[in-house]
Every structure is written in C-alpha cells, then in structure tokens.
Length: 90
Image 1: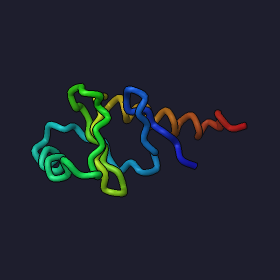
Image 2: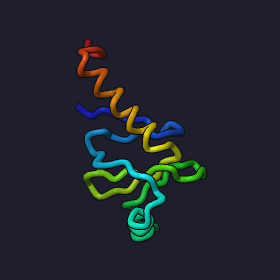
Image 3: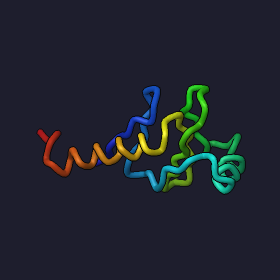
Image 4: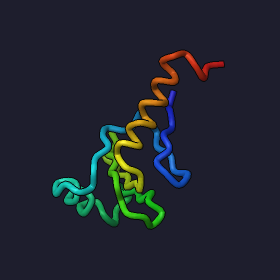
C-alpha cells in the first residue's frame, strides 16, 4: 500500500517511489536538475522558495522541495515506524 510523505506546502510523494533525498548543493545534483529542467521529469514543489532538497524517484523524476533532506527523511521514517508498531490499521 502506498504511503504519502508530505514534502511541504501540501505536496506529497509516494514513499514507495523514493530512491533518495539529497541536498541540491552538490555539483552532480545541480547537473542532474539542469539536464531535466523544462521537461516533465522535473517537479518543482518549492512554491517559489529556495530548493533545499532534491528527491529522486524510481521512475526517474526529480522533485524539488523547500524542506531540508533531514526533515523529509524524518517524515519518511515516522510513517514506516508508525506502521511497524501496528498503529494506524483498522
């Protein structure tokens, strides 16, 4: 079952598709973002704010987020920890 992770400003991502969450400051990440800019493979979920994280998905989409990578990782872990404890099931 797909779990949705909030990546800021009401935007969510299917956690099953996330491969990695990285900082946008590294040169290889900047090149990746530039190479897909203007295509459907780039999703800008920053609402005009500064990009602080780039989410790479299994279907080769890059998602820009205004949240720190650590914040997204914590939310990801909370969703899976919540399920592992058996909570949230009806």
